[in-house]
Length: 122
Image 1 (tube, rainbow, N blue to C red):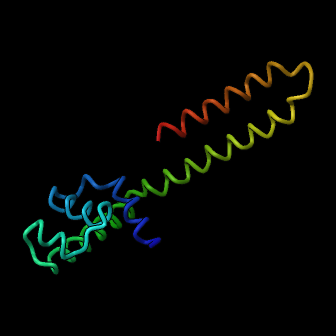
Image 2 (image 1 turned 90 degrees about the horizontal axis):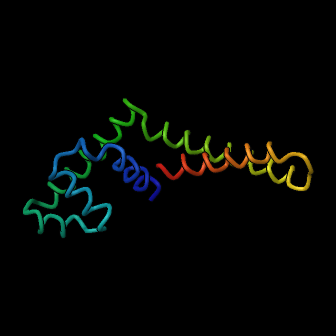
Image 3 (image 1 turned 30 degrees about the horizontal axis):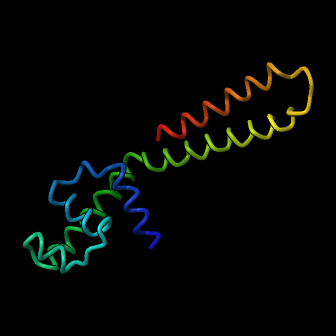
């Protein structure tokens, strides 16, 4: 199941490199949870043809990730954003009861909001 999630994740990044037919088969198999037989019947190819298409899609997506690494970089970046936000929240909470730190609290609040904006852009 974990492999399926990873391939579906890669599809979000690189799905456009697949042909329209490959995209259709991939989406039916992964997103709609159709069986190979169901897809074969709807597309008009053999069950083996569907299986081969799915495997070619998986290979293409994996190779593209190996070459470009966009999914891995994206994951690292979102983890970094989350770490920045956690640190900022911690410091903000530490300063919450202190007097005379309003300017610092405002800057930290700006960091937290910016981290949220960055995270939500993805």
